[in-house]
Image 1: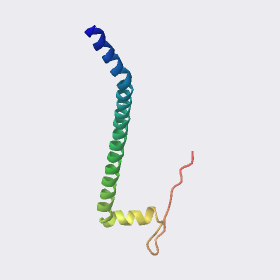
Image 2: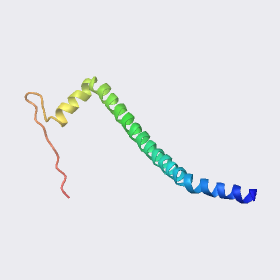
Image 3: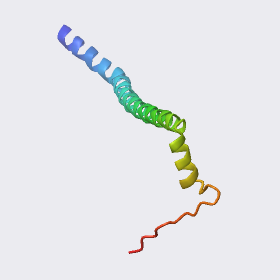
Image 4: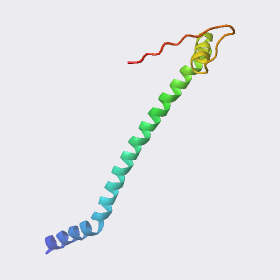
Length: 89
C-alpha cells in the first residue's frame, strides 16, 4: 500500500512539476545561446576598437596622412601632375 502511495505521489509530482522543469530547461538553453551571441558581438566590437586605435596611431604619421589625402581625397601638391594607370582586361 505504501509503495503504491509513493508511486502515485511521484507520478503526480512529475505531472505537475514536469512542465515547469521542462520550461526552465528551455529557458536556460535560450539564455545560453543569447549569451554566446552577446559574447561574439563583444568580441567583434573589441576588434573594431583595436582597428580604430591602430588607425589613430597611423594618422599621427605624416606619411600616412599624405597617403590618405592623395588616395581618398584626391588631393595633390601645387604644380604636381598625377598619372593613373588603368588596367582593362
